[in-house]
Length: 177
Image (cartoon, rainbow, N blue to C red; front, side, top):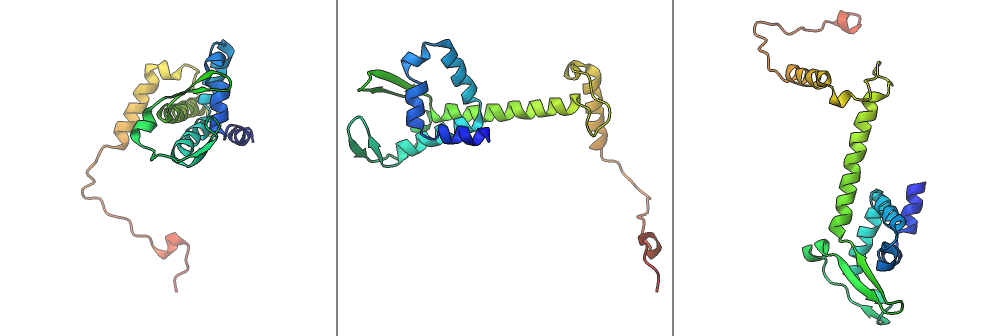
C-alpha cells in the first residue's frame, strides 16, 4: 500500500523535481539523504523516469512561457542528459538527474533486494532445517560445499550397460485385466 501511495504522490515528476532537486533544497543534508532513500525505492525512480520521458516526448503546457510546447522524440541523448533549468518565478535552479541515472537505481535496488533475499534465506531457519551462521558468506567451508555440489551436479557420467526400468501395471497400481 505504501508503494502505491508513493507512486501516486510522485507521479508528477515536474513538481517533484522542483521540490527535491532545486539548489536551495540540496544545501540541506537531511534533504539529500531523503532523496537518496527515495531514489532506491523502485516506484519513485520509475515514476520520475516515466515522468521525464512523458514530459520531454509529449505535448505539454509550459508554465514558464504559458504556451503548449510540442514534444521531441526521446533519443539516447535525452536518456543520458541531466536536465538543468531555471524557474523564473522563484529564481530556482533545478538540476534533475538523467533518466539513465534513475533506471540504474532501479537495477541497483533490485540487486540489493536479491542479495538480501539470498542472505536471509540462508540465515533464517524456515523450511530447510538448520540456519547458517550470520557470517556464512565469509566462511571457506560454505563456498567449498557450494562448488563441490556444483561440480557433482553437472558432471556427465557415462551409464553404459544400465537398463532402463519399464513400469508394469502393478507398479502403477492398476489392476491387470
